[in-house]
Length: 470
Image (cartoon, rainbow, N blue to C red):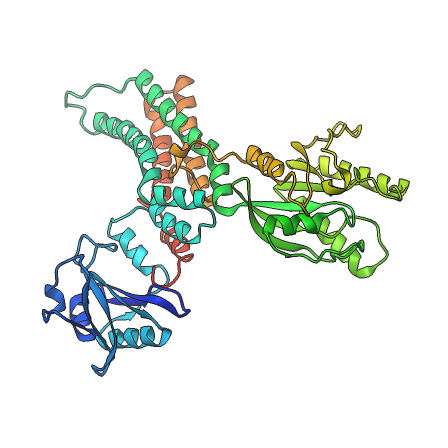
C-alpha cells in the first residue's frame, strides 16, 4: 500500500511527540528525514530497537534530535513496513517533520487508517479494532482493562467456538449433498440439535452481559431530581469534587440542567443536575423545570434528593409536602432504577428511613435509601455502595468478553435468534437440512461482528470514530 504518515500524539506541546509511518517506501522516506548517529542507513537498523539521531526538515536542516525505530512487515502494527520518529513534542517540530515526510513521498493518513490497515492485513479482527478506540476513550480503569483484554482477543476467543460449531454443521450438510458417493456419515439430528443448543447458550450468555459492557463504556445517564433547595446541586458538587453547580439558599437557583461525569462506586455516572421540580410562574424557571422532566424521563438512574427529614425552625408547609409526594409518585412510575437520597444529614443527624408505597399499583419503590451530607461527606460511601449494587462490575475474569456497543449487540442477537430458529425447526420434526439456512445466517451475523463478512459501510462506520494517527 502507499505510504502514509501522521502525528500520533496530541496537538498541545508535550515532552515527547511521535510521528508514525506505514506502507511501501517507509525506510527510504525515513532515511531522508532521520540521520542515525551510528552512521548506518535507516533501513539497516536493527528492527524494533530505538536508535538515536537527528531529525531533518525538507531541506535537510536539523530541526531536532531524537529517536527512531522501524518495524518490518509483517511484524508491525499494520502488518506493513512501519516506523516511528520520536522527538520533542513541539507542534512546530512535529509539523516540520511531517512536511518533510510528505516531501519524501508520504501522504497524510486518514482518521483511523493505521488501524484500518491492521484490520485489512489480518493483524486484528473488527472487535479488536473497536477495542483500540475504546482504550483511547476509556474513562475508568475498568473500561480500560476491558478494552485491553478485548484488544488481546478476549471477545474473539468467546466467539470462535460458536463459529466453529456452526461451520461444522454447515460443512457436514454440504459434504453429504455434494459428495453422495463418498462414505460420509449422515447428519445426525440429535447431534445437530445439541450443537445448536451449545451455540445458543454461549450467545445468550454473551448477550446477558451486554448491558454491563455498555455501562462500562458509556456510563449511566443519571438525573438528580428533587424539589427546589433540596440539596441537588450540593450533591453534584460533592460527587464531582469541585463546585460545578452554583449553590445558594434561594430556591430555584438552578434554572437549567447541569451535566458532569463522575465515578461513584466504581461506576461512571453521567450526572444531570436538574432544576427543582415545582409549579412556577417564572418563565425561565418553567423552561428549566420542563428540561428537568425530560432529563428524568431519559435517565437510566434517578437520584431523588429530599431534605424532608431536616428539623428546621419553620417546618415544611403542607403544600411543600404535597409537592414532594407528587414527585415521589412520578419517580416511582418511571420504571427506572432510583435511589432515595435524604440530604443535609449534618443538620438532621438522622439516617434515611424506608419510604412507604404511595398507593399506586404501578409505583416502584427505591432500590436503596441513603442519608448523607454533601457538606461533610458523611454517608457518601453509602450512596457509592447503592450505585455499585445496581450496576455490578462482574467477575474480573470476564474482562474482554463484554459486548460494548449496539453494533456488536445487534449482530450477536441476530446470530442467537437464527440459531434458535434452526434448533426449533429441527426439534419440530423438520429434516436436518432445514437448519442450514439458519446456520449460515448466524455465521453471517457473527462475521459482521468480527469483520469476516462485514460490509464496507459497517467497517467505515467503525473507523470513523478514530483520530488521525491511530
